[in-house]
Image (cartoon, rainbow, N blue to C red; front, side):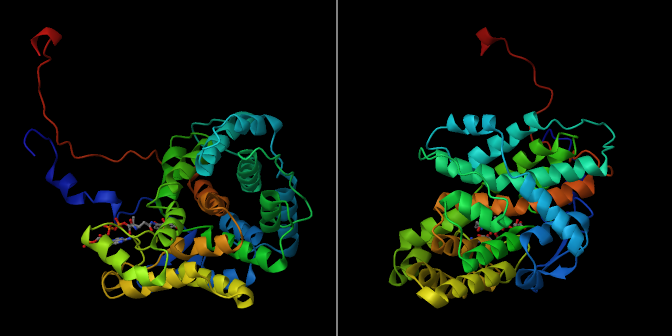
Length: 390
Ligand SMILES: CC(=O)SCCNC(=O)CCNC(=O)[C@H](O)C(C)(C)COP(=O)(O)OP(=O)(O)OC[C@H]1O[C@@H](n2cnc3c(N)ncnc32)[C@H](O)[C@@H]1OP(=O)(O)O
Ligand SMILES: O=C([O-])CC(=O)C(=O)O
């Protein structure tokens, strides 16, 4: 560390990946990583998965309390009303390359939304509750439409207009496939949205907050979050898990696959978590959903391979707290619903936008610009060398 001016104090605080460093105070969700327990606004995720809807859970996250019947009806009606997207946004998506990943399309179109719905820039963050509410409704309502429209247009199909008579989950499925879902499909998608809606200070939520801390507009902040979520160490892992299951191909191949990965010290998609040192409670809920689906049609190879990966990794990785996370079992549920693999992470974003916005709202007016420090490891006091002398 010669030539650096790092102080002993800054070196002592340094935690790669900010592990264990609180960056905000928040009342949105609570995770107990040892027990594998998750609460949104104090309510156990299992209860929400059992009894709530995505619309109600979004209200809970944004407003810190369960809505009354009237409040829920009004919020739901607003969401339905704001599902449509402007034709210019659709035209813009048509110009994206056919090979564009749906997460890249989503990130770009959410950033573009900010041009259509200008947001007052304020140095003091003085924003009326109505403006803030309107932004939340607009983003939660429009994300499914953006995802479904791109998914269809990339194959040359026309986008399907949203239907106001369907729930958030049913309408997304309808816009994606052209078919109204069976009640079980609708409920499974709804619960998948609930369990993905929020997870305290994960990388994409932190991205939202870092961007918003400069008082950039919320569309820019959510676009930054979508970019963050797309990475394979975060939300993008749900897509990678399915590629891994395809690559393994059969239950008999799991052991050799795992041994190879461990020998090469490579990570296994869908396993491990910064906070959970036991099975992620959401993985358990997703297995339950999968079983509801397969009660009727029987388990398939994807699930059998995934279970074998979990079983065989227990003694090695499980022993050091590397267990299935939320991304491990979500893809096998979505595949069973006939959803294309590259739409898995966009589904995560459709759900997580409520959590991102809850944190964004919480930070409004009381945040300070994020500006951590660094430990400089470069040289000092170097002289400029003219080009001809180098
Ligand atoms: C929605 C979500 O974001 S959930 C997470 C989705 N991401 C994934 O599934 C990708 C695979 N998992 C990972 O890459 C990591 O576990 C992360 C990114 C989730 C967490 O990373 P970190 O908290 O930084 O843990 P880190 O990478 O330091 O791992 C700690 C130890 O567990 C091991 N480990 C962690 N995850 C895995 C894995 N998936 N496969 C094999 N070993 C693993 C590491 O090799 C390391 O071992 P060591 O102490 O012997 O060197
Ligand atoms: O909390 C994290 O780091 C990742 C995660 O599980 C999530 O965002 O749902």
